[in-house]
Length: 128
Image (cartoon, rainbow, N blue to C red):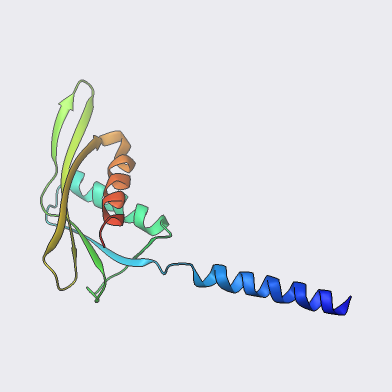
């Protein structure tokens, strides 16, 4: 009985070690904006909140090596559609010490900034 307990304990400890070693460390990310209008700042805040809640990323500062830079280079464009406002953004993904890695654009409604934030975060997840 003692040998079985020791064996069971060893198997559980080995399994926990394997699962812990397979976890990836969150990637540091910084969000920057070139624009300073209200819509751009609101999108920036939504994107930062999405990264803050993510287990894949960790908000960072100081442009440290290995950090992914997510930049909204200019003010968002927008159009009124009936009683709603459609926001259109461009975003650049780069890493510290490298030039632009990728560019994306997209849109979302003013009353659903989370949709833009999720799309931007998905784009960031595709950057090696």
